[in-house]
Length: 327
Image (cartoon, rainbow, N blue to C red; front, side, top):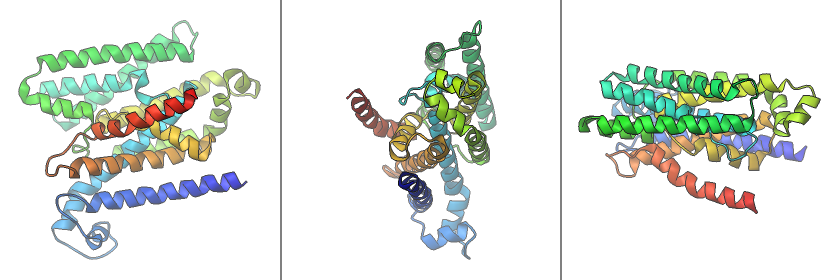
């Protein structure tokens, strides 16, 4: 019971961290905004002026989009680590990000508006998901290893197509393409879809927490305890793929959030999916909000791709976790 209380305390602290990170993100920037203006922009007071308009029109949608995308990536990472029974699995390992990248690059090459970019990116992600699952399923002998290898091959093929598109793209479009590939939240002006997807996918995942806990112990033990392993695996794959597709469509390719956050949260709260999944969503959202705040303030008024910062944070943490696991 003390460990359970500790887990709930960590969950509450992560919720507080999410609120504090979003508050910092809305007040920090080239234009400093007071806390009073922030509260007024959120409807908790009276106020007007440039600060209120900046928060409502620019920073609040971006903050909500960053939190939703970070939560989706961390949720997908937690589900993928159960699916592949590998605590260092990544949500991009199945080629979903590569498929979205191909769709987005085609849209940017054709000069389509933002809606067209998002639409083709999402279509590419779903297409890659269906391709990986179809090839991995084959004659029905679906295994974690076969799924992983198929995803790696599809991701490599998508990477080759992205490189081909970049090589023939005009120079005037290369900067936008590269920013999208490295993660860019400046276009996340409509976060509603990502927020709804985060809440919906988390709500769909939690009722299967018991089955996920048993599946993490091994297929044979889960089957012996009455888990419909094939059905649960398909559900996990679908939910993780949709979470990754929505996140990549909204913010581009942002690595290491789905890899590092679920593993660190697992070390803190344990492997109970009832606590791990919501805690990972909160931690992933907070991390991406803070990383995006740094990306737009470190060399303001210029902005850095947020994926670069998450990689700079994630690489040393990943190496530390890898060394710790080998020991």
